[in-house]
Image 1 (cartoon, protein in one colour):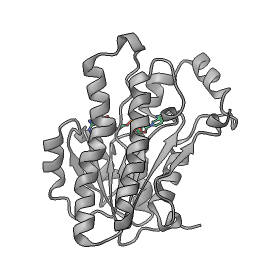
Image 2 (spheres, protein in one colour):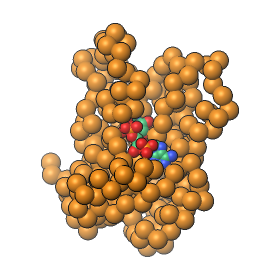
Image 3 (cartoon, rainbow, N blue to C red):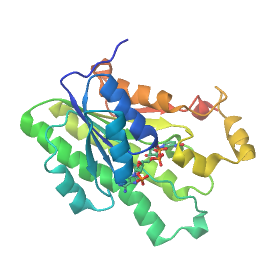
Image 4 (cartoon, helix red, strand yellow):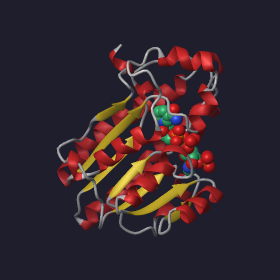
Amino acid sequence: MEIRFEGRRALVTGAGKGIGREAVKALRAAGAEVVALSRTLEDLESLAQECPGVEIVCVDLMDWPATEAALSSIGPVDLLVNNAGIADQKSFLEITQDSFDRCFAINVRAVIAVSQMVVRQMIERGVPGSIVNVSSQISRSALKNFGVYCASKAALDMLTKVMALELGPQKIRVNSVNPTIVLTKMGHENWDDPEKAADFISHIPLGRFAEVDDVTNSILFLLSDKSAMTTGSCLFVDGGYLTS
Ligand code: NAP
């Protein structure tokens, strides 16, 4: 099954590192024009060098007005990947107002801000669109010390479904991918302890963490017309973790 995106324009958030960065490269390789949004300029500049033709937008998604300003002139977008996210490791009793606000501002609120801008211009242009929100396996599976992160991804799954419900009539599909652990910067920050990693992997029937490609392949499938009848779905890229 070949997936191509010639003539389509994509926006990927959190594109400086990890899953977002590889999603930009995969979309480019599949023929899409790509706008890469992230917070650290050096990451975006090195991505633009590595992947000629990629347009870059440097903004902190914590700041809704700055995000709207930065996106106001990016032009038409047909495909959106809301990938930027943070995971703050804190036990329930350590959670602070600041850690809660930061996590929900980036993992949920920014998805609303960015998607509103993209969807408004899709509707104005009268074109179909596809949006993929990068959620997590832990939206459905409680994990100690990640209370706020788990809650933010559960919220993102439900936001995905409501967006799908409201935007379906405009032919705009909205789905999520829900990966298990991937050893990106975020993955390494939380899962480098071999004992902790081995214990987690023992609950994954396929016996390994996910690779970045496992996630980007699912993102591209959901963005593409190969999933034309799929909306409001959460695609788990978890090696079967949730079956156990
Ligand atoms: P990562 O390696 O930490 O990369 C995250 C990217 O998002 C970075 O480029 C980061 O920029 C950007 N970003 C974060 N906050 C931002 C903000 N406020 N404004 C703009 N850009 C921002 O993380 P990843 O592992 O690729 O994770 C990508 C997504 O997958 C996240 O939504 C995460 O929750 C989800 N996920 C990850 C895993 C995993 O195990 N890695 C598992 C399930 C789901 P800076 O570096 O400049 O901050």
